[in-house]
Length: 322
Image (cartoon, rainbow, N blue to C red; front, side, top):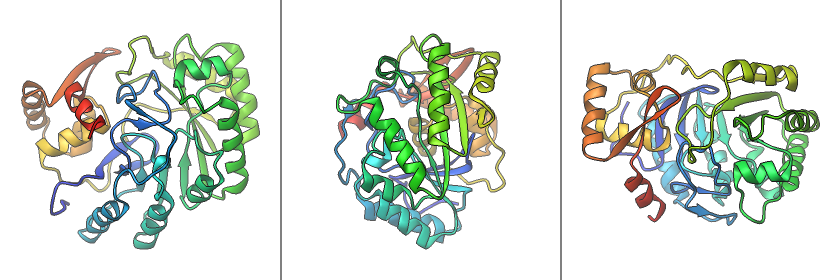
């Protein structure tokens, strides 16, 4: 399925480790976020803010989504996610409501959870079927080390917001913890996370680690054995997220060059992951990737024994200042 022109705000569907075939809906410019996490696969945050506004036109987002659906597009989830923190968009609630009006596909929101202390944002997110916030540390020093938050975001506010949201929200709350070796994997931090998880009461706790090239080279991954041991410490809700993409039941059709650039800019991936997502011949995708690297539209980075294709640094800088 293709839409009449290259989408500005939709990407994918991509294969998500947690959401299956996920149609991404990107509502903020590249790297506009409340945090500047050391592990972020999209690089450092260049536009760090807690100010909500209409960063991209909500009407344009919904027009693209309606056209996608009208032309037979499908997905397991419509997922507000992408280049930054979606709750910064001041019309997110209206977009979630409209998405549910025009489609029966469940709506998910990927968020760092930093702004859930705001009752308005909690009310907007309550319309979603699944909300997937992150919580990577409890101690203030570790929180600042890993997430590098906006100066007006103490960890106590984040925990309070998550706890209040859980009490008010009737949907599925899936908490993600990104573990960075030597930073938030020590026993004291894990014990604090376990206590806070018991307070928040999510349906699921997903453990992740630095599997894609991070913003900072010092951010390193935990081993599978280390992840499993921490999952056991955190209790029965915790599970390690598998790296393998979920198989698709409804493959989407893509024109390679523009779709590759758009996909990789938001979701760095290996050749194998791109083949799974785009459902095209590996040789054709490799040829397209090689040509895009040669043209400096994307770049290849080596991380944890794998080759990842990521957005070129020049393209990231251009997007950050658009």
